[in-house]
Length: 280
Length: 301
Image 1 (cartoon, rainbow over the protein chains, first blue to last red):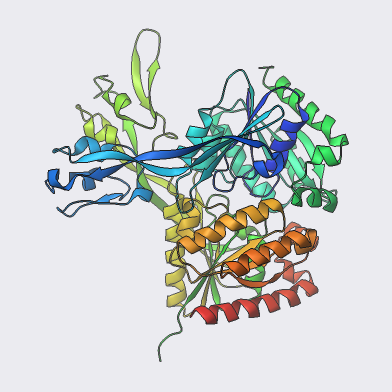
Image 2: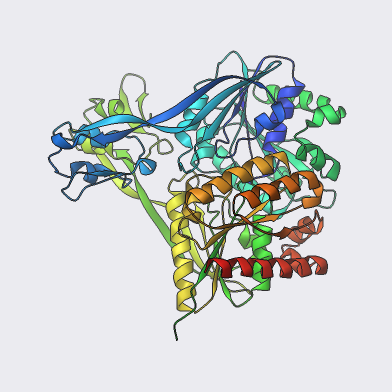
């Protein structure tokens, strides 16, 4: 089973939920940190590094002596990644989507592909948890190819938890696609509600079952509770807003280890998700 | 006399939820009448919730193309499925026949399938990826946008919002463009950052905040954009706050100031108001922060 933890709004507690879920269970777990722009799960897991793999994407390079300066490559490229004014083309690797169009269209086979580094996937082991962290190279704009590569490590026989990136656009969609369940972590503020609604619209489009976790819960605000009631979305867990929990988080400590009464809540959460997805 | 140069301040954080939008709304309240606001978190925009803009104009954002197979022309040769590197084309089987289809969410808009289709059976049309709006708020004009569900090209939409905001500031002779940026480091962040006057980074003293600050700082250096730091909720962990400041200091990132952990941030948000309008002590604090920001701006101009 694959459970993705997303949020819409950043900083609502995705990593906290992912890490505490992983820690509260006893079975073997694969934890994927797909927030490749700013991965944080390892800060809490503190696993032993067992593997590091550089991930690259193919980008074109030109063999100038073969180039006929026809500029067809430049015309087919939708991303302005290869530019020619009937000259030898200039290539901008950061803009390239690796579609292979320029390679295919080049009439003189002057273009070939070479690997361009995109980021790193590091595997860490801690007790029953195998954490795979993707880290995008600084200055590289495109997270989805790295996320796709990370997701190749999913094994259908092992429970997989995915820490998703914030937002609802391409990196988020690439992450949650093909998940069996999405947990949306939010907070009971107008920002939390607004971004939860966006995330819900996206998840509905993808037709994945989902539920909500209210983090930093406030007695004085029913914003999320009311919305979830109206939309018949299950609220699966509430974590109160308090400074003690914020301090535990700030030090990179694990909630269920510092306040053990939370452990059962996470065990119950998994059982509830198994029920909602028909016990896959 | 030549017009003063417009200062474009981009608020970033790396980590989400550190207070970018609360900071932008408070600065807007202080700079009433002197600025244009730009919400570049086009993926999950929130600034409108605090500033309550009145929308004056709304425009479609057309960017990128999507492939669509025209069933009547398709000879079912399957070349498109072979050529597509994004697994966006799939074979749909019904009882005793099949056809090819494009998954619009997976389609990257590269056009390879359409170009090489021997039957010209694939339409490749521009898409409306979102909306962008010109609005007014009680603090000044605002440009904001909304990316459609699952749409691509957030970076281009960010660039458009910034360009419109900048041109509006020129036209109305306003001194500042204040940009509420997206979290992370990827394409919309890069589009928010490149070419701006400086990046104002707001972070929190947590190990995650520190880690993410280090990466966003490297990004600003990569693009040679001057940066400055504000630590929100600094008293949550003074030790980590100190080491974040140390890191800023070593990397030529100006230290603007700190903001204490304060429940008024949440309370103000529940009232959908900038926090400095509900808390006098924070208003005084923010005035000092603005003075310090101005000093940094002068340094880089």
